[in-house]
Length: 429
Ligand code: PMP
Image 1 (cartoon, rainbow, N blue to C red):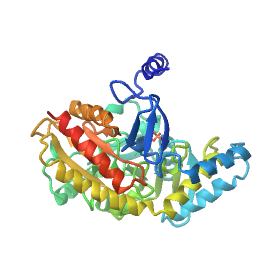
Image 2: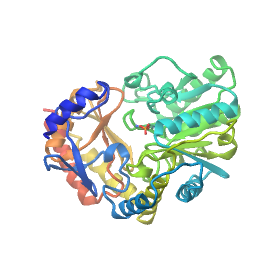
Image 3: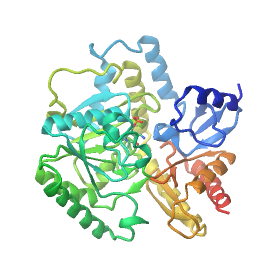
């Protein structure tokens, strides 16, 4: 079956809004380390890590062996029974969360984790008023979509919540362009105070925020922003939900969780993507009194099943014992420095930014800050023809997203940077 024929079958049976990369989408059939192979045998270095899911790498033997061993014993019965790997994983995550008296609830996707976090927060605070950040992305389920500001994903205007947006987004164009960090923070706090005194009922349940906006184009708030916002939240008893679906597990290098670099203490943390290394593993860790707040009983049929919990445990163990967070910091800093230096002379590169292995390159029309999604798409094609996969995102679809597995070596990173700089130059002609 050719890759083109597979595309025809895909189009016939899949929804038209399901995203696919590339003019000629590829069918990935295998992977090892930081590389994947398509159905025609072409090998690619993966700078997008399956949208940040492939945390430790493809086909890591320690992870695969744990999954195979568990699959032979028991894939799943039901969480109505005690599941040791699930309990052990929850214990480990509770400890890693830095939250006292933490409890954990497992789900199967980031969207569902955010749904549950919003449910816990609204129940705990007896309010369905939620604060979110402009340009945010929190998922594609009804609740997580309701707090998603990214217009590209606005599937509905209906909402289960009353949502109020605080400051966030680009500082290279628009109303926030050119603001210094302190001006940005001052404006954000003033806007929030204003919202709380004029628009909301005064009983707001929670703020949900990504420490670094992922789908929004690896967009960073200034240092100190969330700290200043949190002071206001604390005065009003408003909970803080840190959506760590992309930023967790050492992705940002300097810290294990993204929230730590903002110096804030979240009430709830949602996680997904990297923990399962591709298995459907996600959840919430947070203050027990908030998680325990919902009435009645509940269940998640597939949340934390033996197979995914064993796989996630092995993956987490691999991450910690190989100190991949330190690798993320080291290789990430090297990559950002090289991208900054080597794209200086390319006038379509409007911004290079990031933390650890979460690096964004913003592409605009030459010499301007007018977003160019066309150049970004072309870069993806040029990179692919050089054996490199990268992601893209941002509100206008003009930001290259670079987020390889946290196990990437300096040599592999250099190889990919060479290819990507060439690809950007070629696409910018
Ligand atoms: N939160 C963030 C920050 C995300 O980036 C995503 C997925 N891109 C989600 C939530 C939703 O996760 P999922 O696709 O697993 O539902």
